[in-house]
Image 1 (cartoon, rainbow, N blue to C red):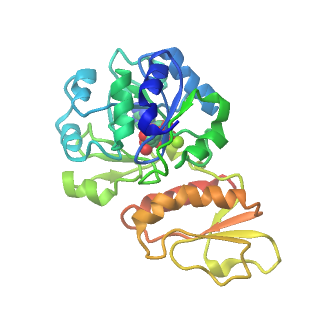
Image 2 (cartoon, rainbow, N blue to C red):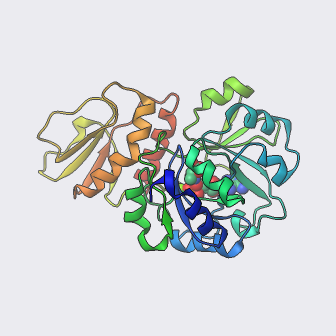
Length: 317
Ligand code: TXA
Ligand code: MG
């Protein structure tokens, strides 16, 4: 149903233990009442998600954070103040009201306030924190349109709110700011440069934590069904195979490629991020035997785009 008019009904579904897919500014989320262990368990089932992969809890408003978890460390509070609502997920201590299944048994919890009015209205109307991973099957491409959710999860979801294509197109940046120096656990829609400007130096250690705390950081993730490799347009082997090319800004010479997607003709990384998963979904549907994806400039959100491409490629190598 349309996100604008479906909020009240979807909130009622959340309150009674159901699953609601909803748009955020990053990607579509698959939401359940984060206070209800059985509802949260349905998320893992619907996504075929391993139970060691913890969920992000979503709040309607930054003021709800101290109500849920009490006081937070000063650096966490500073990031909340600066970037919420927005594509930044922060690590805090798990409060006792959040059942351990939500955090996969960790004593920490990932939490954010999405910058999307319908999402915040939904969470506020539900009156509970909402646990929500991306609304895709585990390891597959993230959904940036309601159509992606329906195609990927279909009947496993009670309601899909359709808010059109998401603005950012890639997931939130995850930061653990509880220690001396903030650590980026997952590169995402909020560029590292913005974090540094706000709080000074940060460490970037996606996937280095030694325990599976951020499987969005597993080497192989975010993968299309079609084998993908990272490479340049010149690298098309002349063997007549049907290949797809994901270009950053320049359309390669026709002939070598059966399907081409250009992320941003103007070379704008924000636009490229917004189109990334949609373009990969389309190449996946083009029935090519291989997708070759061109890396983008590695600054700003480009770093998170390249991270996604590398992980998609790792699934096939
Ligand atoms: O943009 C987003 O973050 C989207 C939208 C729906 O909000 N959600 C999302 O969720 O990307 P998901 O489940 O696809 O990715 C959540 C990531 C996982 O890599 C998980 O391991 C990590 O967050 N995570 C969750 N709780 C954590 C914790 N306590 N410590 C470290 N990482 C955690
Ligand atoms: Mg995900």
